[in-house]
Length: 313
Ligand code: SF4
Ligand code: SF4
Image (cartoon, rainbow, N blue to C red; front, side, top):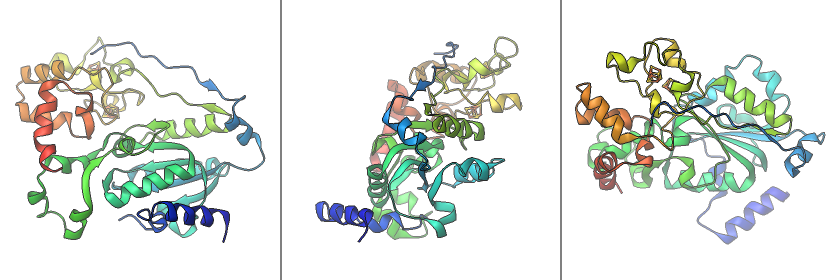
């Protein structure tokens, strides 16, 4: 029995409810200034020592409930083969013939946790990984699958083919509700350049920092022909930036796929959009489209969301 298997066995003995087989199971305030923190130099850290060793960093890509769009985005990166050749890829949910259960330097994880089984699996992955990176809106905020939190279980039965799934079901939640997340790559899907930058910095012994300002900070319309002046509901002011205002550059208002800033002023946004003629329900739908927008709460938003979510607990 190898070291990894022994460890798995020990864990099983410790907590019989955690099955190792889950690792192999296939998974069906506006206008604030942008601040980009400096990279942290890790050259003196134990992690940097590891990187400079000849052994390539071991990485894995894992999927939970989602459309798998973030992993596909990674596969569609130009020169992805070249980039990944710097790593030892031992697990990739979309290419699962080559998967190997082992310990990981980095676990990249996409998807929302929606079942008790998934909650167990993410805890095992966390234990096996030095660093865990959440990929995309589903992993970071709950994403599109978190819509189920706003539908009562009785109604949900009409849409779910396998009724047994509902028995194992829990409210859809981001990874952070179960395990520590070391880094977030936001978006629906993630942005290729951010993934590449993260990997390149890691290989150099540096740690990429998350963008801290709003989408407005990178917006070409800011102060010129802002959508809001035309009473078009753009959510850039309360949304985490770092996407280079991608949608707005294509003429489309921001729909907050990167989630709300910790300082997002929900009350002001609700009032503003109601002033544009949207009903409260329309505003709520926009605020909760990608999951836990309500995490940063104001009373009005929180109560409306919780009424529905609590029914499903
Ligand atoms: S168009 Fe949207 S993102 Fe751009 S400045 Fe206005 S509110 Fe901000
Ligand atoms: S502009 Fe908004 S919706 Fe578009 S990618 Fe950026 S955060 Fe997502």
